[in-house]
Amino acid sequence: MNDEFDQSGILSVDHKSKDSTTVFGFWMYLMTDLVLFASLFATFAVLRGPEFGGATIQNIFSLPYVLVETIILLTSSFTCGIAMLFAREGSVRGTVLWLCATLVLGATFVGMEVSEFSNLIARGQGPSKNGFLSAYFTLVGTHGTHVAIGLLWLLVLIIAIARRGLSRGNMRKLALFSMFWHFLDIVWIFIFTIVYLTGSL
Image (cartoon, rainbow, N blue to C red; front, top):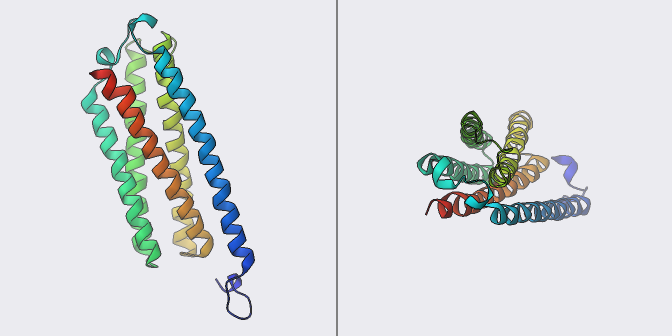
């Protein structure tokens, strides 16, 4: 980390500026993602209901199964938060351990979602059947794709931290990943509430 300081030992202004620019740019990305999900939620709200093909949440989904998915994803957000605490304390081992736990939980969530999609398609409830299912697969599938991309990012980050430690660059990447992961958890809470919970009542 010696290259991050000038000869007087003061943190380089260039690094501070780079951090601020990176964080700002990432916030802009999250805002565009928020707009994307808002449009998908709006589409789902319009196309939900029996008038668009007869399928409803009560007929085709298992709320307990989705509840388990939700608990797993929210737990992964908790383990990610613990990893951040260990990172701030400078513990590489603790950071990597809890990030691996986050990776396993996230992969379990994606696996359950893929299984759910496969079962729906096998039962003839695929996205091409009606507008409701098309909107459902698009909304939930988009979120699942984001989680899968996040897992790939997390795997690369774990390897980088294990090899190079908690450098300033790795800490910045870890902070951005944490923002991204918590954002996906918030989106899923809305999906669970609007798509599954409300639709099952």
